[in-house]
Image (cartoon, rainbow, N blue to C red; front, side, top):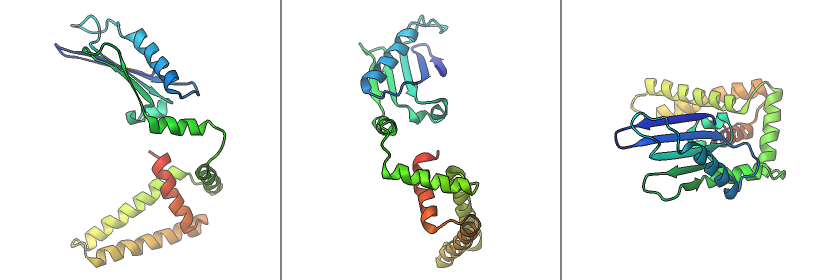
Amino acid sequence: MIDEMKSETSGKAQLLEYAVYTDSVYTEEALKDALIDIYSRNCNKDVFESHDRATVVGAYLFTSRKTYEDKSNWIAMLIKGPNDSEPNVSYNSFNIKALSEQNDKVKSKDEIELEKLNRYLGKRGLELCSLSAKLLKIEQDHIDAADAAYPDFGPEHLAMIDRLDEQAYRVLKKKYKLTDDMLTEVDVFAMSYCK
């Protein structure tokens, strides 16, 4: 268990349990078993002022404390409301598929490219997510500069952004020996791997 949240009104007592799933088996059956176990251990807790136990119980599984920071990263969840005869379990199929592929020992073309890019960046004292954040900041600074210079957003506005971006990218590429393709890869991989 990594966190517990409770809330109570006169008509409802809600208890939410958050846990890290540490097994490497990501089948729906294994995830459901873990959720049912959490539910069974917590559904009768007497932690409310006006209720003997929760009227709504939820349990969420995450792969780590870090993934829990963004609560949308759950891999499976259970909800049992007052009108439910049994708890309802839902699965985040996208996250489960990614985790299963991560454990299959066969690297995809993208995984191989990402490893190569990370090694290359690492040799230059760079890291994918921080470089991506730096590129986004540079682009936003250039948009802000163009907004100030050309508030009418005409062709000069776009031309200024393009010119400033090109200058900044030229400096970065020279300093860290990067190519345009590498900068594109940083943008693409950052969308999936950086939060």
